Amino acid sequence: MLRTFLVSVVHNSCRRMSTFKKVQVVKLSSNYREATQVVQVPLTPPTNGQVLIKNHFSGTNATDINISAGRYFTDGKIPFDVGLEGCGVVESVGTGVSKYSPGQPVLYFGSSGYSEYIYASEEQLLPIPELKAEYLALVVTGLTAAIGLDVAGQIKSGEKVLITAAAGGTGQTCVQYAKGKGCFVIGTTSSDEKGEFLKSIGCDHVINYRKTDLFEELKKSYPKGVDVIWETIGGETFEKLIDHLAIHGRMVIVGGITGYKTVGFPSIKIQNLPSKLVMNSTSLTGFFLPNERDKYAEYFKKLVTMYSSGQLKIRLDKGEKSPEGPFRGVDSVVRAVEYLHTGKNKGKVYVALRE
Image (cartoon, rainbow, N blue to C red; front, side, top):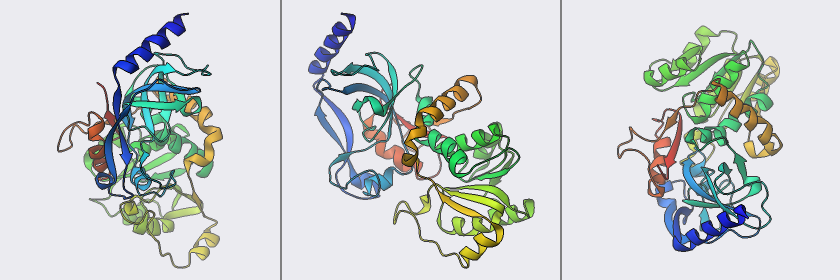
């Protein structure tokens, strides 16, 4: 009876609040401002099997501009919704929904996260202990880091692990996850301020590549190479890092952010690549999170435990230091994505849809 009453109240609320705002791609382009538009759509009760989420926080990801360009997760038919993550509260549920109830805090992992309200299936949701933006860092970026380092990187205690873009949303989790596995962690970053943050979360060796030649530093400090390289940059960085793998070393290719604004993954030219791999018994492994869906629940539970116990520190960036100030509301999503791609962020960039 109580459940029926709550659902009825929420349905009446939906009728009173007749519309909501969300971001859609209206033109295929890696220029997010040019590609997207904020639209107003009707707010209706959820249908059979649907859960209606009142979204409070949306997480940004570097690959957002790959999606807006039609490269990933879409058939390219416009318009389509965007946003991989949301963090909110169940507003109401449709018939046939058994796992979630009104008032329950949840994480959303799908393709409509940049929205004030989200219609989701039960499979797109993860329950969380409380409504906190920090949990956004455990979805795309967190799962990528943990599953990627274990499955593709096969990291082991005592190994030297290099994390590129270490102070970013994924990088911060990579550093701490590898440290938790007993690895010696090297992190690359672009400022001393970010470097101090990396030291505070356990990074053993921070390299500010704007002050120090990354490749000379690796050659000097690790003449025998490093065991695992987490590569997200692409282009010339990718090409040169190959030479810094130790015997039996593994490079995990997670992204190529230097090319996202233009071609996607930037082309590379590495002379004698087969010979380099064979002579040192090294390997290149690509990693794409959606191919590991069967591991989501296990690793999400592990990350929540790490965060709850204080083993995993999460730094968020709401754009307080961005030119126009914090990212608040759906209308600031474009600014948040653009800010992420300036490389000035420290931690996970997110938008507060509701304070």
